[in-house]
Image 1 (spheres, rainbow, N blue to C red):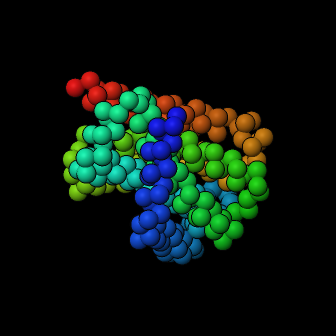
Image 2 (cartoon, one colour):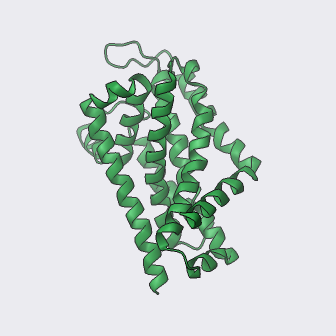
Length: 254
């Protein structure tokens, strides 16, 4: 665990030493939420409630911040390979799982810290959060962040170009987020589109976050839809973590 913690700490320190990266990662979702929330303010109704689009879109924009920050934090793998640092880590006498956990925990912490800042805007969206709900949201964001950092890890491990990584992940990540229910409800979508959204792992991550914004932890446990989405999200995290460990083990053998 010491090796994993050293790598995780390195990721967080690297992030805070790049103020422009911190500013850009927070300003982009904030602008998107403001302009889209304002633009659809008078034209969106969710079911029988008069839920504003700004409030509806807020969990989706939090998820966007979490996913983009978590996945793109793994670009450092490509940079470390180019600098020779990754090769040194691979031959070090530490288990491959330590390397994976170090990178995944570091990337997740970077994303989680940004989400905590954005949660301060929940009252602006009309969502009241208690301390219990904030703690539950924090834990859920860590689970979701780990899963998608693992996805980014597997892709970054195979690539040698930062530009190539951006191109691949933009093609994958943006559709995943668009088709998660963040921009519009799944109910009412075309049948084929609804089927695609139901197969999207990001959809269940969004369900987990939406529920956690309105229900206390004791209520979440009793909510069938939340438990189902949480199990799928946990399974996705386990799958991507195992996949990341497998690509590292394969590289060390070769």
